[in-house]
Image (cartoon, rainbow, N blue to C red; front, side, top):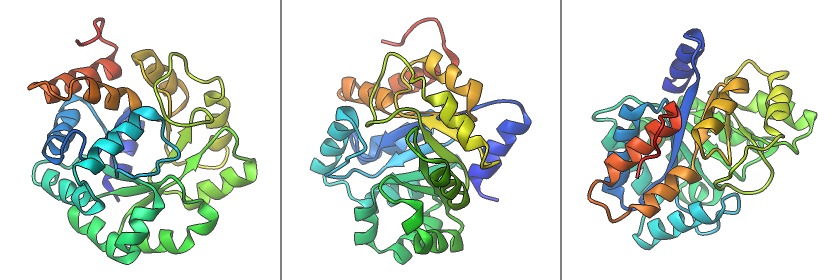
Length: 268
């Protein structure tokens, strides 16, 4: 059983919900990304999504677009993202999902990627622009090396598409809470609950909700219906805001704890 399944099933047995922070690899730099992963684990993260910076991130809003641009300017490539995981694995068993667009993976070579992901200790992969109907070979390669394949379900997904997503996914299913791109929001979309409920009819896999989850109350509201909440842009925005601070890692860990626990005060 993969680390993702072990962690999410343990949470389910305990009646608890998961917290999944997203980081763009290489923002502000590779060494800090590795430190952030370890700090987020200590702060209560259950799974980490590690984003591969890409020049045309069509599913991402301005916050993560800027993070990708910063990481690419520093020369961050897919190989560096894999090396980060190998480094983290010396000290941590936290489940890590590679979050990417398809083009960088194709350039690396899918068979080589699957072998390398398994070798460095990655647990899953989510490719935002790969639809399940065109992913048979991809799924076969990844699963042959023990890598979970996670697909996105959206409010606009038909029931037929959701059924195909459920058949194609392993580890968990990622429900996009709203149409559009990633980004911070003041309110959760009313589409989240009915979308999660529609996905539930097709699978027993855990369901994680992301896109627009920006405050502790958003996390708790997501937990009412889903098994885990994914926080991306809000965290990346904090990294951007404090990029030059000597205590950046500690600040981000406190911010993650605030998101997960809803502590009374917002960290500076």
